[in-house]
Image (cartoon, rainbow, N blue to C red; front, side, top):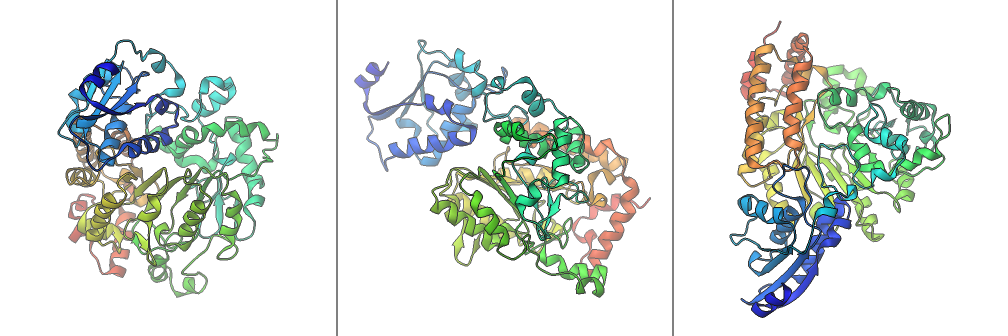
Length: 564
């Protein structure tokens, strides 16, 4: 087949794409990008062609899928690098790849010309589809993505994929609040800290008795009180933090072998970071508070009284000093695999930029960066975060955006919605390859309008249908969606079901957004917390008075939440 093409075209390169299958999920796109960047030219001659071969075929989540993950990534990367489909020939033995591509061309490509896909029947995709190491990414799948679970013993497979209590985090991670309280992760119940970074080092906390007890419980399939939020999420069908941890960090499961009977773990290596360096923030979100936002301090003084203000600081740091936490983390930079930046607002923190600069200095562009940001500011003292993100192989940005316009500015006080939209447009222009998604906190305040917000940004070209990750609010309880009365829940359920139909029509390739709305329906209807409606109104009116606002001016439909 190559000979036939050489007779027709000037072949610039013949490129084997099978190594794509050998890459981890997080490496594949960057590898494709590198390959295509090497072949990029500002312009091609009319008869020039780039020939790519894929003898192993595509990957499909299940037998009903029409579009595989390879062709989706390949086409998207061609678009990103700006190589026209006209100059590309793809040879494969996977006929499903071609038929799926042709059927869904409009959703796959921004190029009006389709790829020239040729089927070579001498190639076979059979061995690939049967190989568990090469399974396509499925957001809702619990199977760890960086290992072949068939090579694990039965106990480790059970812990990672079947256990209702095991979580890998206590073996790889410590989470610290700006106030110093340390937890096994950010989802843990606040009343169950495992230590305090103001008084102890991270290494000391690593094997404090509370942390050892958690490990003992998990290895014995016993519930952990601190993990109640994950259990509740899983009961509603959400992909909880626990399940996500086992999926993305399960390749470190052998660390349990170094765990003593009392839960002591000899190896102190923080391969996953989620340290909130401070509570520095520019917003006063309704569902937040002074612990995570310096801007909340004055409101809290008004709510709690001046005596409270005498004993609490505006700005809190997680470490024993302002730089203590950074000094403790720096020795772990050589083997850290993933860093989660949150706050406060991480894009306003010097520590965040210091970490990125040190990673770049050490050549650690392979570290996966994940963000929870309000996305209102994208630079600090002349340093644009976009310039840093472009240099890393894998960056995922979850923007804490709950609604549009005036409602967004009410729920997250201090938001300039026009600036947020401009920031997203700038990001698309400067670093379009960064994985960006909306990460709304689903509360009673934005429950009705979240579908239309999602749809509006998709239609505006700011995100794809799959780029939404629903975070269900569980605390404070009076903001939960399950406080809604029966009729309001029925209305929300209908809205979400209609939105799910729209998502399926649009193509939610990850299944993340669809699952979020499906699980929200289950969560909302699982519990009747309508007795908290009076508290919702009391807290809302109290804050409205302080801020000179009125919720009825912005979200009048909440009048349906009648005081019982």
